[in-house]
Amino acid sequence: MMKDGQVDLITNFALTKERLEFSHYIMPPYAIQQTVLYVQKGNKDLIRSYPDINKSIIGTVKGAHIFERLHIDPQIQCVEVTQQTQLLEMLKNNRVSAILGIETNLNYQIITEGYSGMFERAAYTPPDAYGVHFAISKHSRHNNLEPQIERELTNLLQEGEVSRVIDNYIRE
Image 1 (cartoon, rainbow, N blue to C red):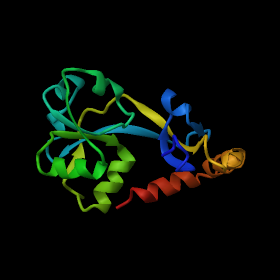
Image 2 (cartoon, helix red, strand yellow):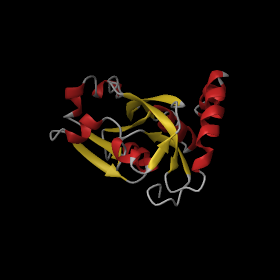
Image 3 (cartoon, one colour):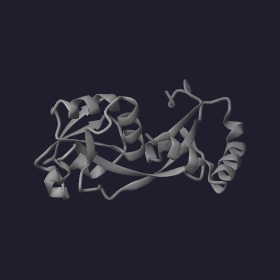
Image 4 (tube, rainbow, N blue to C red):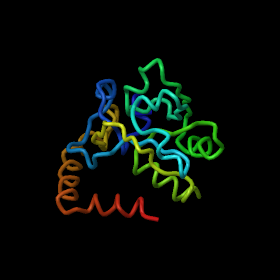
């Protein structure tokens, strides 16, 4: 949708070379997000290191640009779905050993979708964290707003407002 201008602005957008072709990224990133693996409560030691992933079935969202090593390692068995909410149900029903996602997004969905207390972070944390951005489609008629959005975002970051919003977003 960003590629053809059906969407003007998107949030939580990871910067990739491919996406630069059709998106203007608002700088700076508004948050640094940690990639995490979640398992069923009581199973955090199931994945203590990267080699433990080889013994597990990992649920991921198709097209997510996180923990790229996992997607290119032929020894890892991944199950891809179209929406993150599907992953939570799959983990609950033991269809996957663990799910991969962004910590704030998973925490929010665990809380709002009624999964509180069912899952926990695996002992192993993937090494990658990355900045997430607002981005404007290069086909948007609102591209002229990019400098203004960057100024306002910078002000909100300096005032700590973005951190407060994110903290409220994931609070139970």
